[in-house]
Image 1 (cartoon, helix red, strand yellow):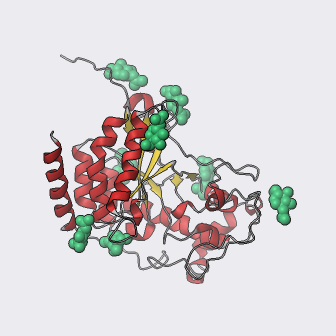
Image 2 (cartoon, rainbow, N blue to C red; image 1 turned 45 degrees about the horizontal axis):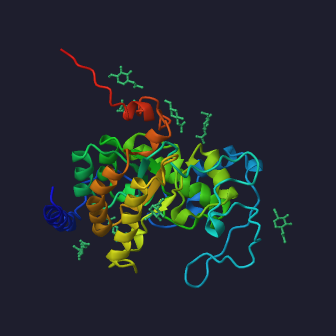
Image 3 (cartoon, rainbow, N blue to C red; image 1 turned 30 degrees about the vertical axis):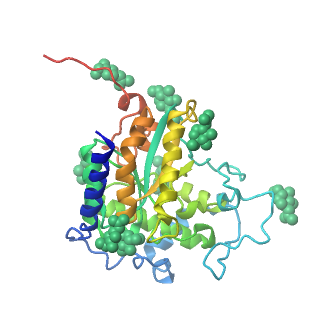
Length: 339
Ligand SMILES: *[C@@H]1O[C@H](CO)[C@@H](O)[C@H](O)[C@H]1NC(C)=O
Ligand SMILES: *[C@@H]1O[C@H](CO)[C@@H](O)[C@H](O)[C@H]1NC(C)=O
Ligand SMILES: *[C@@H]1O[C@H](CO)[C@@H](O)[C@H](O)[C@H]1NC(C)=O
Ligand SMILES: *[C@@H]1O[C@H](CO)[C@@H](O)[C@H](O)[C@H]1NC(C)=O
Ligand SMILES: *[C@@H]1O[C@H](CO)[C@@H](O)[C@H](O)[C@H]1NC(C)=O
Ligand SMILES: *[C@@H]1O[C@H](CO)[C@@H](O)[C@H](O)[C@H]1NC(C)=O
Ligand SMILES: *[C@@H]1O[C@H](CO)[C@@H](O)[C@H](O)[C@H]1NC(C)=O
Ligand SMILES: *[C@@H]1O[C@H](CO)[C@@H](O)[C@H](O)[C@H]1NC(C)=O
């Protein structure tokens, strides 16, 4: 395809995506047994028998005693006074992903196969979702989707479609907070109720999660691990969440990031060990960017896969009737001729 028709295609997709903000209908009931959508879980939920039982089932002796961080007046995490040697393996401080406390699993940060790109989208499902999912389906492309529990409750049928299309579903918390600023109860509830709503709506129990803003430390990791959740970060970030008009960065800046990751795929940066790319299913703008750059990323890397496949998570959920192709299976180019 010549560049001009690619440009026209991009423009058309952007236009259609902007008309897509109509949720499918829903017949689920979230009136009890869940925190309020888009609110940090509160005492109302902590006082339920369900939560009390969950809390009691956790072995808290395995969770490091790290006090929650504070937010400053701008709503960012206050890092003043934090020990420069980073005893808590706090990602926000220095992108630490190898825990310092004993017994805690390291974060997954890369697709460990050469020239391989792990595709991941945070924050869905969103209203701009349908056209984007159609696009992925047409390209026979699966990705890892880090879903926000409140969005699953708001858009349950969109969430169901993600599973039906074969995407790899992970948890991205209930209300998208800075997790290291929360109490133990709040951290547990953010993860647990997202897991619960995904099970209710989609019928599966995820085994992975990603901290919003990457904000994680050994206390938060330990609580996630108690829920059998693997912490998954990324090693290349489009910064698409900060794109104009919703954010502060120009489209040209975001394009430059994508171009760098295309270059890296071509110039041997990931020849020994691949990447996990962070993008967002946030609004029509980020969806349109994802669509625009997908063909270039696809041709720059040997394999573009959901994280489940590059990590060989062949059983990506607690329910064992869902299986996923391993890396070897989904990159198998051997063809069998049937007659
Ligand atoms: C900072 O952390 C290091 C490593 O855990 C520890 O040895 C040191 O005592 C800590 N310093 C303070 C002031 O807490
Ligand atoms: C989609 O995301 C945007 C940006 O976060 C938000 O304003 C909008 O409410 C979301 N739409 C739905 C239907 O969740
Ligand atoms: C975690 O997995 C173990 C082993 O499969 C299981 O016994 C336990 O109930 C799970 N814990 C939670 C909180 O799901
Ligand atoms: C590969 O591309 C990246 C992004 O443009 C660049 O930073 C890096 O220096 C390049 N590496 C080589 C070996 O050319
Ligand atoms: C996204 O949709 C909104 C509302 O329809 C529109 O104002 C905006 O220009 C669109 N943005 C992009 C990048 O398409
Ligand atoms: C996935 O399985 C293949 C063998 O089929 C192996 O070479 C590779 O190291 C495995 N990857 C991971 C992350 O376990
Ligand atoms: C897995 O089992 C559950 C519960 O029995 C069922 O609802 C679901 O449709 C099954 N899914 C697949 C892919 O077999
Ligand atoms: C690759 O495909 C061939 C032909 O379908 C099959 O015989 C072989 O077992 C496959 N290998 C793997 C690792 O899935």
